[in-house]
Length: 392
Image 1: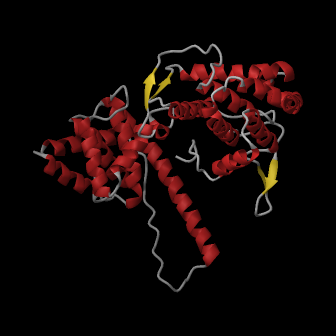
Image 2: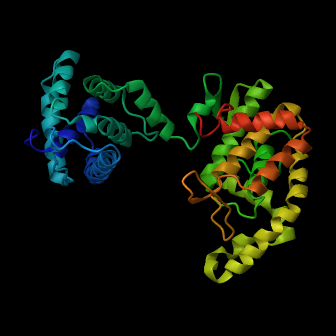
Image 3: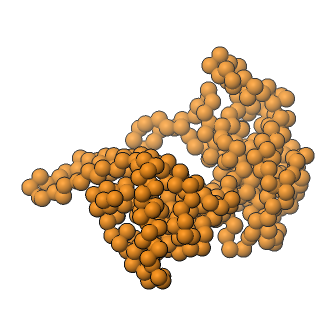
């Protein structure tokens, strides 16, 4: 295999070197690597095109000096590999590693493999290596010797191993690990059935947040996002109450779906349920809009009822914070849109519209937070000073 003139082969020699750290390259790893070369091809095409667009934009903005010698952009041939090509690379890597007698030999071989890699591939190689090495483990955790080889690659590339490892480990969980900080840990509480909103829990906080984001009659976001807000609330409550462990249901997907439906159901009893009409959206758009227009009339009472489950004043600020972030994350993709003019004179969709702002202020009033304190909380949220999903 000509690694000097085949960028894709050179890239996947490094990636397979990581996977071969445990002394083998399994069939699952070979299949994963073959499929991953297609992703690498698409990744390169995208990043290369974006680089060209950015360079052209800078030239248009600042001008370019045609008299200066410009570096010629080298177009690389980055084409997905076939299964037999990946197998040849794997055999080559395993044969060379078999000749290595100690860690110094492996480092030297890693240096040879890394020496022909263009700089813009470094981070991509490490990301793909973590994913490839995890395919042989039910928890997607690489073997210790696979980790060793990834460390060697990071050293050759000048990449921060700890940061990239943390990024990979974070990707294995549905929640943002950063929210745990250094003081909290996660434990499973097994499968859990949602039976109602218990006072001063993440469920109770999320109930309020969902209603705040639904204050304009439109709540358009993923269950993943709702679950992440639940975890944010759970971490904040743990710190507020001096707990060290955040307990998470194994069936979080089903649990969040049931919780979300329970949060909206009392309101739907008064306004109608738009989600039952979504299957034929175009035909029902007027009915959906009518339901959305009714929501502001009933939202304050709904929020008040939801806040009856927040009885500990230590949770007041974190409840407001969670609602603010949920409103910000709500995509508002329904028939009624709220827009504002940006600094360029273009109309853009509001991240938090006036109905949602009113809902957040209503939460503060019902919880007994005075206007000055509420103003301070909102300002800190706008400036990213209170943590959350966007600022970790």
